[in-house]
Structure formats: structure tokens, C-alpha cells
Length: 540
Ligand code: VG1
Ligand code: CO
Image 1 (cartoon, rainbow, N blue to C red):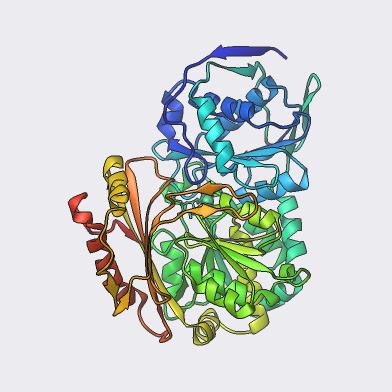
Image 2 (image 1 turned 180 degrees about the vertical axis):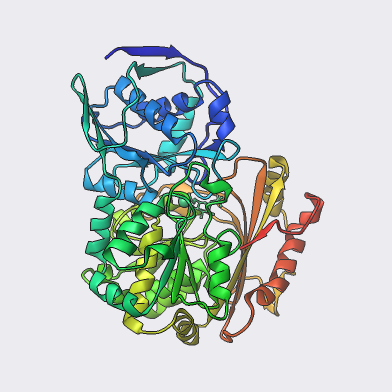
């Protein structure tokens, strides 16, 4: 095996965001060594035993094949001797997290821009996960970025493409590249975490519809829902991963998973549960007949009903965590259960240490992310299995489960307004100017503002500190809004405004309840001063 050293020069924009490095597909295609620089930077900075396994896969999107083959060559060039690549390159983010832990791998690459569109004009991303199975922590991504800013060369093996169709080994001197099954171990993990007999029985008289959105969860959904749990194969929509996701947005939301959502809202919907996942399989959307379950509520319901889930039956249920903008519905449940509740910055990487330290069993984000201590990533199919377990145990519809939840805990009405297409400068200026706001006269629904400011977080396990993670304005327990900039976009800036209003009357329309708070927040931010419109481009 020949190893070549290739001279290269840094790209200024290789700073990873909320969840890995994400750029336009064309950036990777047209800018020489863009991928290679970043992979080399990752491999130089991680301080690991090169004889331990590393895992490589992706969500099947355009450019995955090139990225995977080049990463194998660069890993060989850098002296890694146990490289495990998934068959056809297909690996979901949660399955990668599990494989890392299961094989005692030191790191894993998932080539995915998650819920962002794919194809030649879409996005490509690189997620790097570390030995606990979780996303690389900020300290590491900072080092990677710093390395990428002074990179002068990368090393690459002069080897042919590996055939990824079948599981087999390839030898290159003392190194081995193994093509492995990316699905089987994840299926076994799910079998160990849930009572499949209970769910199977439930599904003999209740139907599940699942939309894999032409993305990575298709093969996993077939193996779990169809082969293990008896779901009709026709009830898994868009189950074949396609490089361009059929030109669609692999984002499990009411607007992007429209067919499934419309089915749920139709009067004669035949399904008890409808669900969807995103490009890389870590997000989940839960919908019942005529009822969309907002992800913050979903987290709270799973916490409140954790005893229905086998995974949570054998260990003490000690704590939960949510990201800052996620509604406080789960806090109320944690309080009732007498367990800890942590509030972290946005992004799954902040949950890892809490999970490693056994401080929490369950965590989630408003952005359709939920997971437990079984891995260190959010997990779309797992969340669906949680809901199936709850429905099978309670023998009630989704809407009955939600209504009894709200009747007991009250309801946190919630919405997220996204303002896309801001200039980066305007986005940064809005956040910077928030520091200077006068707060004394702030009131909402006759409730005084009780707290406001930029959110900072000190990780209780290692005291690492991070500031400026979003600006929060609280009106006691009754209302709250949060403003932050997205860290996953690839063009301009996206401002996110998160709105939460608590009310014990749970039969109101969420959009109507949050609208006055939205007006209040927009006036506070003074968005019109920075942007040509105050109309959100998306409301979730
Ligand atoms: C968004 C979500 C965040 C999530 C992240 C990654 O980030 O808000 O909660 O962790 O996407 O999701 P941002 O910075 O755009 O708001 V995914 O499914 O990567 O990987
Ligand atoms: Co994702």
C-alpha cells in the first residue's frame, strides 16, 4: 500500500456547528481537498489508539460514496488498522452511536447533513462521534477547527475503492477494512430495550404508519417494524434511501412529512400512531389521529410513563435533561417524580456527560430529538418504540394519553418561529443588541419578567463552561421565550424564536395561545430594524 502526502491549504470556514460540519454539496465538490482537509484535521486531533476500531457510514445522500471511500483511504494513510464501514455505506446516527459503544471503537464518522436536503444542490455534512458514542464535545471541535486553520498536508493511501455491497474483509498490510452490517446490532439493541411481544400484540389490532422520508431509517424500520413487529410493509412510506431523498426535505415535521400528517388529520385515519424520522435517523415526529404531539410534550410523556418502557424498568429513573429552548413540560414531570432535571445548551453533545455520569436516563430537544441512556445520540426509531410501549400499556389513543397528561400536569403551549434568510451580520447584531435592552417594564399577561439574559451552562460533571447559548426572557413559570441563531444552516443566518405559554386549560389552540407572546417577543427583539420582514419563514 502506497501512502501519499498531499500538500493542501486551509479553508477558513471549517468550523463545525451545532451538529458537525455542514456545507453545500457544491462546496465539497468544487473546492479541492475540502473533505480531505477536514478528515485529516479530525484524525490528527483525536488522541486515540490507532489499532482500535473506527466506524464509517452515512445517511445515503449524494456524495456519501465519495466521502466514505476517501475517508477509508485517509484513515489507512494515517495508520488506522481496524476500519469498519457499513454495507452500502448506510448507517444512521443512532446506530453509529451504538456501534461505537458495542465495538469499543474510538470514533465514528457519519456523513450526513441530517434533516437538510441532499442532492447536488443540497447539503453535505460530517458528524464525528467519539468513544462514548456521542458527538465530539466542544473542546474537541474547537481543536479540530484550529488544526484545519493551519493544515498544510494530508496523508492518503493509494488504494482502490472498497466494494461496499457485501460484508467482507479487505487487508492492506497490517490494516483491515471490514464491511459490516449497519442494521443488525441496532435491531438487537432495540429488542433488548423494549418488550417486543407487548408491542407486537398491540399492533395486531392497531396500525402504525412510519415515514422514512427516502432517508436512512428505511432499512431499520423494515427490520424492526415489519420483520420483528408485524407491521404491513406498505405502512412504511419512502423506505428506500435515495441520494437526493426524492428531491424532498428529509425533515420529520408537519409541513415536510405532509402526506403522513394529512393522513393523521383526516377523519377516517386508520392508524393509531403515525411517525417519521429525518435524514440520519436521529429525529422523530409523533402524531396521533388529529393530534400532533409536540416534541417537548413527547419528552414529558415518556418521562411520566417511563415505567411502561422496559429499558427504564431495570435501573433507577434518576433524572432527565432538556435543551434550553425545549418547553418546561418535562420539568413539571421531573418535579412530580422527585428527580433531577437539567437544562443544557442546544445540541446533543451537551447530554453526553450527564448520561455517562448516570445523572439522567432520558433527554430531549424541541427539535424532534429524544433519547435515553442506551446510546449517546438522539434516536428516532427508539422514540417511536417508546410511544408504542406507552400506547400498548395504557391501551389508549395518542390523544387520550395527551389529554390525561395535560389534565394532570397542565399544558405548555409551544411554537418555534424560524426566520430564515437573514444576513449573518444581522443575525449576530440582533443577539448582540439584546444585551442592551431595558427590562424593567417587561410584562406578559400581567406577569412581570422574572429573569432574562444570555444563557450560560456549566457542565456539572467537569465544570466546563460555555456562554451565549441563546437569549432567554422568562415570566415566571407561566411564559418564556428564547432567541438564538441556528448552527446547522449552510446559507446566511436563521433566527429561531421559541415560545412557551403554560396554562392548565389544555383544550386551546396552540397557535392562538402563543401568538400574543410572539408579538411581544418580536417587539422586544425589534426584528423589523434588522430584517425586511417580521413574518417567519417557518412555524414549527
Ligand atoms: C438544530 C436543532 C438542535 C439539534 C440540531 C442537530 O440545531 O435546533 O436542537 O440538536 O439541529 O439536529 P440549530 O443550531 O440549527 O438550531 V440533527 O437531526 O443533526 O443533527
Ligand atoms: Co438528524
